[in-house]
Image (cartoon, rainbow over all chains, first blue to last red):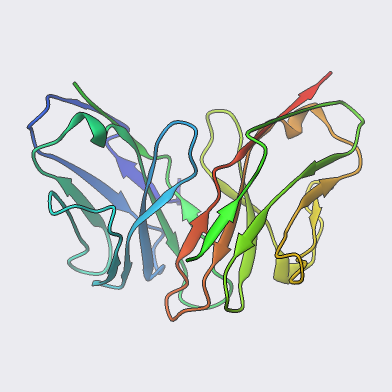
Length: 114
Length: 110
């Protein structure tokens, strides 16, 4: 599968624990996005990378959230001191540098905080 | 603020009937509009974009800047069209952030 891949697909964690998710975008896509989706809602923008530079963070992203894309390839999203309200599907998407902004999505990581 | 609204959470139509999924947006700049679709147990994927002016799987959507709408239409619904549909807006900024609407669940009744 040469599409966007995310790992893990599911994560159950206890409140207060830290979790880290990984996203591998389509190779040569220099734009990478993280979204969060809760039940009954559309994807909500969290953060955006162009190559290794993080160009925007949503105000939805509290200080407990951090994202990196160290070499401009894969990206990680870490949530520290998880809370039950963090339970959601975390989606990663990538898009190419040129042309129309079609975002290619991964299958997501479903986080459940118990 | 930029926003995408989809007034219908659920829409049920009979097979063969016309279908229209409504989408309205608010954005003062020059937007790029998309429809994304998510079939059961599949990832979110692009259905169509307004600049392409194409018909995909029989679906079309016209951007109406006066009414700030981008409704998705299909003259004859098929069972395989049952899915979650999201209208999305790409901002004409330097990095094209995409904002999604809340989605409409389309159910086509056989």
